[in-house]
Image 1: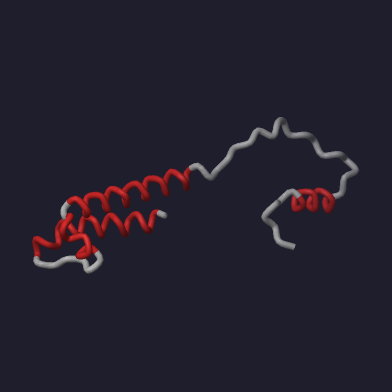
Image 2: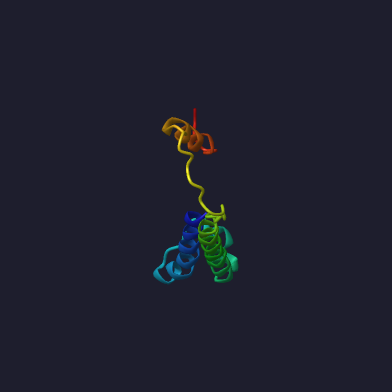
Length: 94
């Protein structure tokens, strides 16, 4: 999502600046009658996508409170402890 946002920012800003140099993006020539407003809208949409993508990426971590740690039982084998940890992993492939 951030990549598309950066693309739209470049497209919108470029469609505002390139006509001053005598060039224009072919994609933005479709809305040439609506310039500079179309370029501004495209850049704003791109900035929104970048912000949304950055916020979405930062909220993916979830903290859980699992309570106090308990001591391991003295007769528990290391293998059963290891298998228990692997069984709890929902992303582990068999």
